[in-house]
Every structure is written in C-alpha cells, then in structure tokens.
Length: 451
Image (cartoon, rainbow, N blue to C red; front, side, top):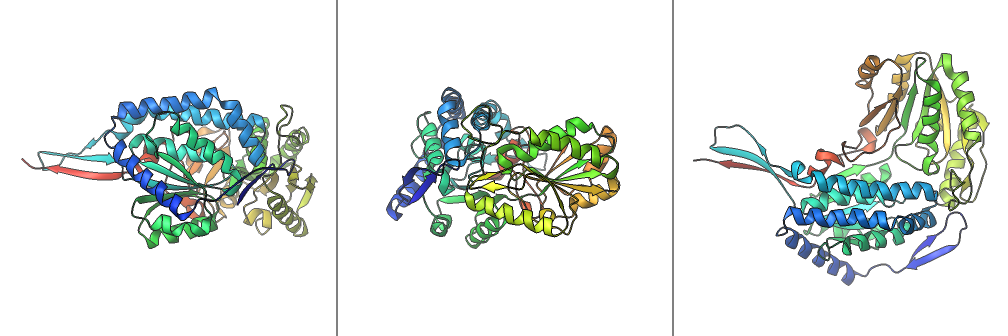
C-alpha cells in the first residue's frame, strides 16, 4: 500500500493499492497500442491535444496546486508556479515541435541524404517527489509530441499527483495509454525495464538511484537519461551586485524548502565581501515565514518527510562539529526545518562534500576568483552553477572553467523549455528539454538515397 501523508500536519491523505502483475501487463499492452496509433496520427493533431493539456492545467491550476502542496509540502504559491510552468512548456513545445523534428539534410555523395527523428515506443520515467508535476511534464511533453508513449513510476508519496497527471492527458484527447501511471515499488521495476516494448528509461533522482537504474537498463540495453543529485556552487565575486546576488542566493537555496537538485547549495564568496554578503543573506533569511504551506503568507513550507529533516539535521551537526559556525536557525520539528545558515565552511566539511537536500545555506570563503572556481569544481557533482560578477567578459571566460552542465551568470539556475538541461560527473548524463532533450529517446535515423 502506498500512503500519501501531509508533511505539515502528518495526517494521512489517501492510500493507494499497488498495481498487480496483470495490471502492469495490461498497461504495457495499452501503451504499445497507443504508440502504434500515434504513428498514424498527424503531428498537427498531437499539437492540438497538447495545447488542450496546457489549457487544462491553466484552468485547473488551483486543484493541481493544492494536491501538490498536500502531498509534498511546498507552498501553494510555489505549487501554482510549478503547474503553470508545465502549462507554458506544453504550449511552447506544441508551437515548436515541427521545427525540432524537422529532418536534417546532409550533403554526401548520395542523390539525397538526411537524418530523420522518429519515435521508438514506450519510455519509462522514474520521477521524484520534489517537483511532482514539473519533472514529469518536462519528460512527457516533448516525447509524446514526438510520438512516443509514457509510463510513469512516480515517488510513492505523490501517487495522487501521478494519477492526476495521467487524467490530464487522458482528458485532453490523446489515445488511451499515451501516458499511464504505474503504482509499483522500485524493487519491482526490473521486468518492466526488461520488457521489449519499453524502449528507454529516464530518471530524475539521487545519484545512488541513478547508478542502480543505469545498471539495470544497461543489462537490457535500454537507452537512459539520468538527471541526478547536485551540490551546486553559487559563486559571488567582489565586483558583483551584492544585494541582487544575496537575494537570488536565498531564493535559489530556500525555494521548495531547499529540496531541489539545482538549489544554490554552496555559496562561494570572495573574501573581501564575505562580511557584507553574510549580513545581507542573514537579514533575508530572518524574514522568511515558515509555516502552513496552504497560507498565502507562508514563504517556506515543511520538508517532505521527517526522515529527510533528520538526515539534514545530522549533516548540520556534523559540519558544526567540524568547525563551522551556526549563524541562524538549526532547529527542526517533524518536517519543519528552520532556514539555517552556516559560515566558515571549508572543503573538508560534510556540508561541502555531501549534497544537502533542505533549507541549509553555507558560506565558503575564497581568496580570489581562481580559488572560487577551484572550490566550485571540488565536488563529485556537476549539475548547475551560478556566477555573479559585473564583468560579463570575465564571466564568459570563467564559465568555460566550471565543470557543470549549466552555468547561469547573474541569475538563478533553473530549467527552461528553450534550453537543454542536464548534468555531468555524478549528476548524470543526457539532456532534457529543447532540441537536444527531445532527440534523446528518438531513433536518429540516417537515410541515404542513391539514384
């Protein structure tokens, strides 16, 4: 039985019965049938259905946002923004999919040669709870428009979200089985991955989960895309707009109660401005209003589960024992973890070496820009990085030295439908969104025509 528990109240919302082997087989059959049907459906029709998905999400934003908040605890304001981002992304891809799928002509010795981008079948998505709509839709939208079908194994604590997303696609005109949710445990995934009707696996989650799924998919020669953990550096050089940098640092670290792979987890600040930066971020953190995520006045909700708060608490205490100074916060009760700030953090401390998935901000001092870049790269992760400086030419030069899948200059790291998104090193491989992400699970077919 899968149970949804409200993180703020700790009350049970609903219980869901896992799908049986027979039900899973039926979903695989239905997904394969939908794929064969979509092969015959004109792109223009798929575009119309996807525009209906966008309209449905906008029209029912409050219902979807409330469900997100109740199941995983982010503020209602953040949940609304998540749903609307899914809607705008559906509209974006519906408008641009024809160009993204356009065959690419290549000059050769043939009469005609080109590359075409064609669907392959069912794609299995294994998705996390922290952005229960966005992570799913950013996979599903381009893949379904391209002609693939989707099977979703969502995190067990957001089963209500999984079924609600399935309903959106079902009611928007797509053939039955185009997008389906599987209520199954991770231990039951192997036969699904092994099934020949499943043509690829995408996972967003922790690095250990990614390694496990990659090994399983490799066993059966299935294409994978992995978007894994991160310990994103937020580099502030001495010539930066300090107020803007501090404001964005707090937003990037504390949104979704810090539970984001691309959160600004390591604030690396040039020595000269550490005191001023520390004072400003502390002021901003003190003004955060943590509490009931259903209230509009709340600016930070609870963490998603008590065990996650306990783990963050252990990392915090370890780092303090190692010599860091607690500037603010540091307390938690149940899932409610106060916004917390540590200073004096160095590269041998837990909060630097490990991914911290919650509202814990740390300030790391750098002697100069070269040391700042070195500290940024001193991690096993490489998902996103932010660099703050008023010298844009310097920023461009330094960005090439940062080992990360995404580098944002004077801005918060975020995913955007127009730009490919993904990581390097232990943060995974492959890309989502944009042209590159859409092509990941397509047959990139060479066609060579000789007269």
